[in-house]
Structures are given as structure tokens and as C-alpha cells.
Image (tube, rainbow, N blue to C red):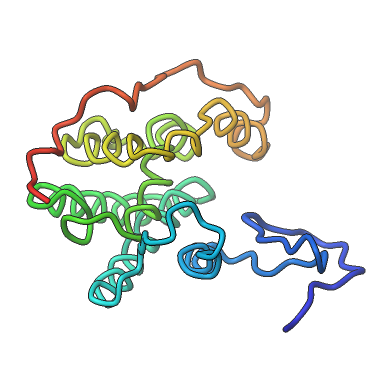
Length: 210
């Protein structure tokens, strides 16, 4: 087992999985951490039977994660931190191609890899829940809003309403972080008031049978 350097003084990234007993970083790679939480803590988990990376879906989940990360999770950042018009437009086109693909998939099934919640849904959700509140304004991802995609918007509400999910979303904290921590994009740290979306409102995803 490798340990984090005790005298490191450079930049760090989040999320971080921290070992309290050994006082060291276990991982700061989100794709690794989500897999660890899926299996490595089942002896203390309240819902140990939940498997977000089942063997029969692993190939599909891996493939989905790849294009969702490139086009959407990282795509919004490529838009937001572009410093020239050309790279921004290229990233924005790629982002909306991936969003359109999600919208099409979610028009025929409840979740992104079928009719059961998987790791791929969690990874997609964390970007979609921030889209209209942050990325549309802060990262200039305003060609279409999440609310303009009926399947994805209802899907996001569906995931948000899974028991336990809403407690992981503090939108005021999210907005304060983004709008306040990128002075090159938002030098005065102004936080927009809206749009204040109610993700606990009814959705239509129950139309898909389990």
C-alpha cells in the first residue's frame, strides 16, 4: 500500500478518500472511489445488497462512463475553461452531441444503462444536477438547458428522489463554490439568484416498467 507524502505542499484535488486511522489519502480519483464505496464497505453499509456495478452490466457501464465523462462530465469544464473561441465551440458541440445522445437513450429506458440504477447514473447525475444552476451560466453551456430536455430533466428528478440522494445535494453550497472559486471566469464572485429548480417535483419516469 502506498501512502500520501507527509511533506507535500502543492495543489490537491477533491474528492479525497481519507483513512482516519493511518492518516493518509487512499485515493483522490472519483472513478476509483465510487467503486470502493460499492464493495469495500459492505460490512458496515446499511444497504450492502445494493450493487451499482453488477457483473452483467459492467461492459455497458464502462462504455457509457467513457463517453459521458468525455462529453459531459469533463465537457462542461472544457467549455468553461476555454480561453479561445474555437476550442470553446468545439467543446460545446461535443457536449451537446453527448446530451442529445442521453436524451435519446432516456426516451426508451428509465436509466442510462437500462431499467436499473447503476454507477453510470450516479456519474451522469452529478453533472446534470448542476447544469442549469451553474454550468449554463458559469461555463457558458447555454445552447440548451437541462429543462429543455424532457427526458433528461425528468430523469434528473427521478434520481434526485431516490431515498438518500437529495441529502447529497446542497445547491447553495454548490453555487457558492463554483461562482466563488474561479476568479478568472467570475472575478467578482457574484452568485446568480436563479433558477432555483425544484427537483422534488413530480416526474414521468414511472412510465417505464421495471
